[in-house]
Image (cartoon, rainbow, N blue to C red):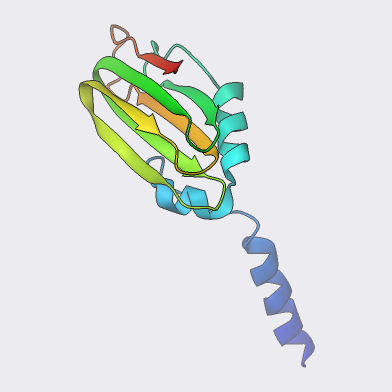
Length: 134
């Protein structure tokens, strides 16, 4: 292999270390982050979601057969309820604005993640996320 080709291959490998993913492209995110990582990320970055452009997260780890009742409310904030199974991928449980709620029973181990994104630029929106294990 020529040295120019080797330089190009090294550059490509280096560039692959940085991947930009749209903020609500959960399928792409699930390809690069495990369920445990998503759970840890959500717990580590939990915020109240009240400031402009804030994103609030809440997460619970569910064992197979475990149920959780969840609720997201946040005025005009974008709300998502997601399940990231250990096997990979993501299940979109619900998305919307205002209020979304439901109950989820895990078929496999994974992370139930609630997301509220205040993308309005207004300070008067507060995002509340709740998960109750049953």
